[in-house]
Image (cartoon, rainbow, N blue to C red; front, side, top):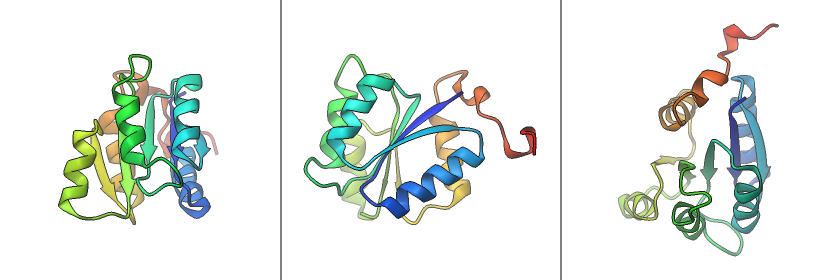
Length: 135
């Protein structure tokens, strides 16, 4: 099953992202800080990471850079999901190694399309679509 790590300090946002992903067949793990995200990424080697920017302590930009420049985690796509909407924020996120930058509030369809677009080959096939799962 495709595993996605969610790094966001908002319990509400983590819950929303987790709900959308899990109802579409993805396994999720949630953490509230960039530091915890780095640890979980090393430990779990998820298929993809959703990263907020404004986090307590280390920023999501810094964590993304660490993840994408570490040989143990550089293969894991990082999608930034942030309330920071400036073009400069998006450009900076991409310079840190993020494969995409989504702005909050993000819709279910936009989130799922981005996740599927950046999953490693074969991983997206392991997540079921809602109509494929047994009710």
